[in-house]
Amino acid sequence: MRLNALDGTGVRLFGDPDWRGPCPPEAAEQIAFFNQVRLRWPDTIGRLAIHPRNEAMLRGGQHSALMRHKAEGMTPGAADIIIPGAPAFVCELKRQDHTKSAWQPGQVEYLTAAAKVGAFTCVALGARAALDAVEEWINDETA
Image 1 (tube, one colour):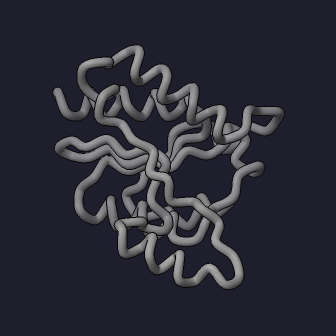
Image 2 (cartoon, one colour):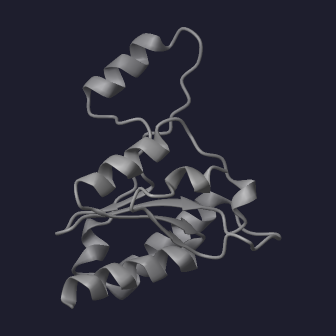
């Protein structure tokens, strides 16, 4: 995984990049994260947090479908967790053992662009790390 590709971009890392071992798949981490966010902050960020469905794998002759998706607002590489705010929260969620995750095309560029416009941007290694990032984002906003 290209964690070092984010050096100097302003994108923060939450979680232990040296941790190795069995861990839930990314989809399970996402479910755990969104369940906790909606439980802890049901009337605020729990209502606003989204996971864009951009990772459809289009193959072969599906170029026209990809072009239609882009025209409809699909942004390849969009982060897994986006929460509107001032600043916005933009987080790419990877597995706790990041060596078991893969970067998709455009993800590093998306995070870098979000950081350039002032979003709170991060990579979180697991749901717990993503929740830590949200708590830091909330505390930064109220400081």
